[in-house]
Image (cartoon, rainbow, N blue to C red; front, top):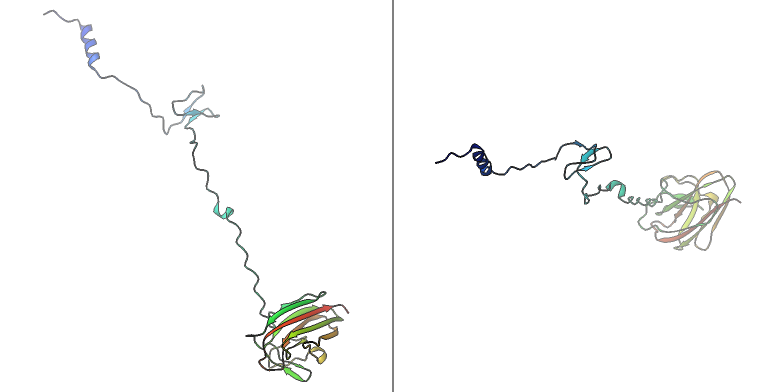
Length: 208
């Protein structure tokens, strides 16, 4: 049998070997691209560094819920208790009309007025007078309902005297003049014990 040349043997061995390939994984690395060329899947940035391109569908930053939330509505101011310590306030200079109902109220003031102690349940209003001011008071409602003004809003058993020793009653308003400077209280009350019900009070603290 004739001898086979060595070159033919080498070629046969190479043909029998499996084909070789090269696959590169550039994930997680940093590569310079001074020539502007990057491995496949990366792009050359302005700083000449190869990076993976940003995904087009990347989720935007979530809005700050605390900033985007609408302002919580401020709670409304609580209604005054219409007592000496928390009266319904009215301003000097313009007439003011209040509508109310003393049903379920307490006896905050028991003023001695016109020879009678007014110790029914009541509502209290307040304004600040300047020296020499005038105060007009009118009331509507129950025929036995009264309104008067005092400088001291003292609770029973005290019986502070009312200004002018007079009251306003339905159809018969009260006019006071020459008030001292400071707080003046207008009280919706009655000499008829336990009288209560709806009323309309008109007050006007003004310069004389």
